[in-house]
Image (cartoon, rainbow, N blue to C red; front, side, top):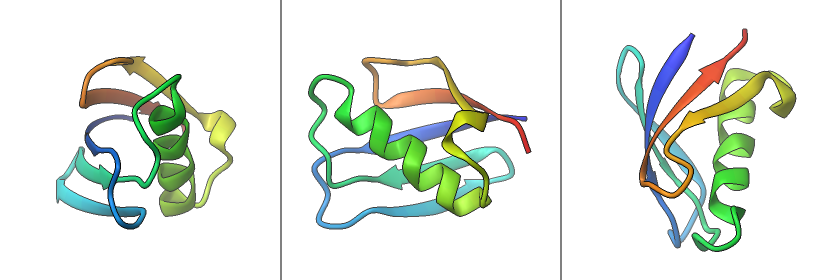
Length: 73
C-alpha cells in the first residue's frame, strides 16, 4: 500500500496524524540533515502499523517534506 506523508521535522515530539485513507502527517524530533528525519519517519510509521522498519520503503521525496512510502503489511 502506498501512503502520502507530510513530514514536520524539528518538532517537540514524535507523533502521527491520519489525514485521510492513505495520507498522514508525521512530526519528528529529528532535524532534516543527513537523512535523520527520514529514518525517524520510518520508525514512527513502523510503530504505528506495528511492522518492522524493513517493510517500509521511501519511494519519492527524499529531500522534500511531502513523501510517498510503500508499506508492506
